[in-house]
Length: 592
Image 1 (cartoon, rainbow, N blue to C red):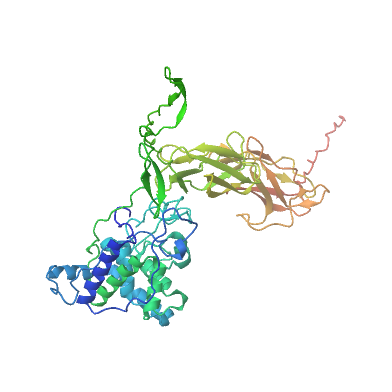
Image 2 (image 1 turned 180 degrees about the vertical axis):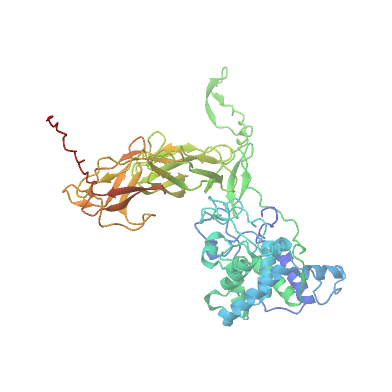
């Protein structure tokens, strides 16, 4: 905005006379608005370099620069009343972009509902919007009333302006060192933090949205129970926005102009203020001279010592002239020229913010490696990617997760596109949640925190390793052990939790309280066990016993990850075997 806003008018006979003449001309051609209240001074901008941690003496804009153009002498409803300007000039200047005009009128209606005693006129908002941003740069706003790019004033760094240190971490103005006025109504961040509004109902308080900014300006002007129909209150309200008499007179001029009449023009077609000048840097020391401060923050050269005039030197010891007995004058050495000042090195790039550079969900199973790596992007105070910024990543939690190499904290320097990517994360042996925090910056650190989790190992399939029938007699144990293997995506799944349950139904959803069972440490029956596969994904169940109830039963094995298998167990009495009958032995009968 430094390229579009004229430097604040300074107190002086010339500028005061010009402003007074313009106002007088307006008064001659227009019906006057409420007169300036007696004693309305307000004061000019403070001398550059005055330090403040917030709004300059409470001014909404921090006494930032503003447009000093005055309205034409042709009034909106009396075209051609001046022979110096064409009739069209008044008509064009009176036009206000549609969205901007709608925002001013909406703010007037809203304030009339919530603070009717203030009697806020939308023309006052239009006047302030004109001198602050040229009606949002001639109405350059989107369908929601937001400017396509932020409207920013120059950095309030004490170089021609007041010095206001950063109050928002660059969140609104992109500057983490000094504050800047922001948006169509040019609020500084600390003032917006208090007065910001959401007038368009999008859930955001955006100083670059004309609806939000206009309502915030209206509420700000009405603060303290002001009645803006009273001249003294109106003057105090305007001066609270920018504490300068010239600012008050400029706003008053446009206020009177818009009161005489205005009309709507398409967005983007408003008349822009003339190209302004920018504040000049303070002159540095010149060769052969020094500088000393003068009122207003400027410097004036001081003359260098001149060589002594002939005959004015003080006598001093020296060689005696022949036959004289006196000493001659000591010659004065010629003055040494003051070397020109060395150019100041360019200011170092200032770190501004830290953002996620595309890190996805951080999840891994116990002992596994995370597929995603934490990545952030560093930006400077103007929002551009910033290289060579040290970023520290720290793991916090009790899962035992560490960065590759076994470290809980690592530091990575951002590359040319501002990104810094942490090493891969290795999950610990405990399940649960943990966080990874990225931190950058020293004087005003910025942090990003990522949630992560470690889950149990998984298997999507489990099968028996053999197909032998499992049979036991009532009250006996099964002779053959049950063995199974768990896999995940075809690979052996080591360390996977498996639940073994005796069930009644085919799907294995209903537990059984009779039939086969396991034994606990005290030898008591158990029909559910929690087990874990070995390093090869294998699982061998403990001994299984049969109670006195014969029948066919089911054993269901389920894994973390959804694998399951149902195994049949049969309890039956052994078949009784009948011994074969033997025929009587034949005996020989002796012959008679």
